[in-house]
Image (cartoon, rainbow, N blue to C red):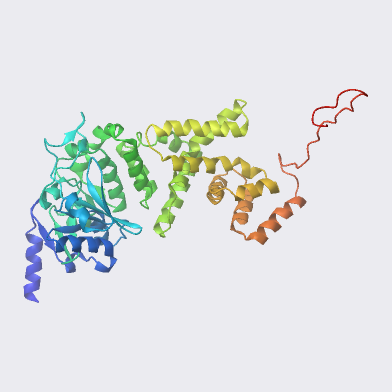
Length: 454
């Protein structure tokens, strides 16, 4: 008992220096092996059986230590991609900037990378210092040095159930501290996306960014404009689906990182109506994430961009444009502006348009039109979207609830609701009067009959 106490005291007093490896046993890191992907374990075991080192690495280790459910599992090894691929039945080498192997097990992909060396003269960079190609292999310690934050430079061996920590990452993790490995300004120049990741991790951990790591962000925020739009979109999506979306958006504004992501975000959040709608959308997104439900990127970005679409739509209608063409034109203008900064997938933008374009169609409750709406793939998403609009007093809440009841009902209930419309007062634009065709004149005797009457 006394020996154990003394040993614990010595460990607390003699802290390992940065870069000095620390091996943390199961009783200290607390990772439950049963929560680790069996496929990730299999990849590590297969590589180790062939004489290679292999560890689960990065975000999965971080989340397991603090009790969160990892979204995916990555493996790091000293085997090269060409050595990894033959060991697995379904594996493919991918990537140019960063070559790695995807090992496929049904629906799960275990991303397996070779230990990398830190940035050096051998790396290809652009004029701003961003690394364009990163396939210089190295040792495990070098791999830990080139990772972005200490909390992500953690290696878990599922065979021995040991965590290997080179940069006091476990200590930072328990303090909620996001600290950059190496010189922060240089590391942000290598990959400006790290500034967004710093914000996301700080909010997720309910912690803060280390003072030294925070200092260069305001000055280097403009570097995000040099990052490919597809990478910015991917990181933005992670940030908005981390379960603390509104807090992340506020932090982005605090650090001046928002302007290159969602243009006019400041304008939207300064407008009470736009701010109310976006806050409601992000709040509902956070709730779904926290209870383990999925979030549609199409719905999320449709909500974020709706205040801009609505504003443009109202302006065009005020200028005399018809409502439906005006909405189509407004959507085109907003999406064109956003595509310059965010590479929104074409499938997502198509779904977003469907959600937006169904909104005015909900105002016309005619049986034939209602049944056509049922056939739309994004019908339920559009009804949910209408509910948010009703909550912000954009549309009549009674009308929005009618559509929600219709979406939730069975076939019999729906038929009854649609039949009941016949007894309600006709809505504006919904008169079901049959248009009379002009009566044809009877041809005079001897005159040729009109074409089609023959």
